[in-house]
Length: 154
Length: 154
Image (tube, rainbow over the protein chains, first blue to last red):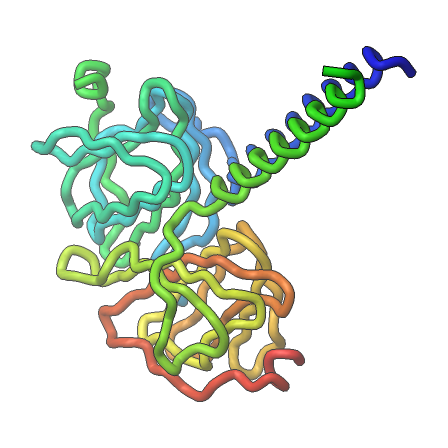
């Protein structure tokens, strides 16, 4: 093997090794399964839900992981017992009725007060992965109208 | 630069680049800050707590991220309104009084029933990162005796 060959082998090794590392890194960030694509009319765009824990007699709190593709969001909605959102990955938006939209990112934690209409979803360019922790002891989610593009882009 | 020098430079570049990738990978898995080292007597070994949300009048549920070093664990304890544990990273143990110890890993979700004594912590060789979601509406955590090495290793 001459000098040129050795350098090429080294460079190929470097690139393929760094690629495998990059791949490992991406996989490691997905803590929960993506779950099933949401097909009801309570969402705009593409979003996936993995139910982690159902509300039951042991604990009336449900937990689910939601993955929003860029631009995807919930309709406006409210929860009789409120909700907690933990941002696991990406960049998303959260807005309560009457307040400005805020940007949320990996590591953020939000309390949605009971009965306050709000929406959440991905930013326009980046997906958003969140865990939703929802008390069911006072009733189910109240779904409202879709978030318009004007509201989303405001 | 001679042939030997070029090969050495390539190899050093390969190693340092792969190391920086590895570093990025490790950072990316830490969703929440590690927080403060726990110094009370309710834990064995080294554990860190980052409070994410306190219980308040909006929602009487608290959320915290706990990082257990290998071998670290809580004392036996119970929660009047139960608890939900989400395993974010590593390998841990969970045991309810009277049941065998189970192994939990990244992506697992557990409901601890109200008033059932239990403990959780890291496995002997691998750290464990969890989010604890605790209803406070029926009172605070009841702390009990430490988990002995015999119980831990069973």
